[in-house]
Length: 233
Image (tube, rainbow, N blue to C red; front, side):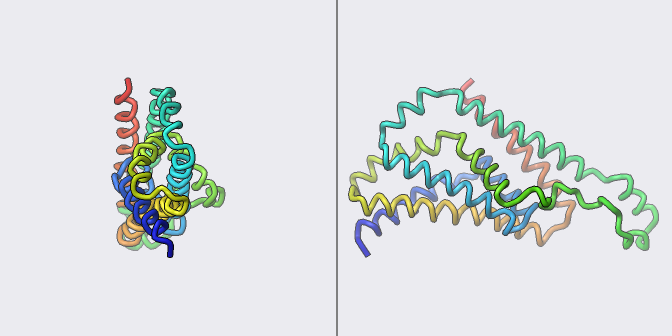
């Protein structure tokens, strides 16, 4: 295998992990995807995040530092809009999670009737939001996470910032291709790990844990959105 390609793959993997490893709002959402939808249902979100990372990386490699000043001139609106979307998404999920976590009248009646009544299935006992609906396909989840990740220009600026170091160590076309591939693989691997972590919690915990995790997770997402806006206001 070409030495430049190997160097590019390694550099890209390191850069991709450095970008993905900090657990931000998207990472919290991916863990939630695993908890609520399982590994197969959560992987479209992981693939979407990795897609954006790869496209931004490829764009930065192709256009170089020319893009950085242009994106900077858009400030602070990309960050404000991104924070607003996160807040809205967090509040929406928080309300649903809170409603699902609270004991319903049917649950209270079942407890009062005793163990025998608990074996009787109660229609609607499982919150519809906690499992994938027929209308919520993998492509819908993919599109949602694609949009949420793409609205943050920090990813593009990150890759633009590390390009000088890349050009010093590997400036050939093979190295640049390897760099993009390395970023793609590392990003998807990390996002899939987050989903798998959530899926593991899903199988080892009950519905009550998943409901309260949704409350905490979505509250965290809303707070992170507020912090994002506060940084530029």
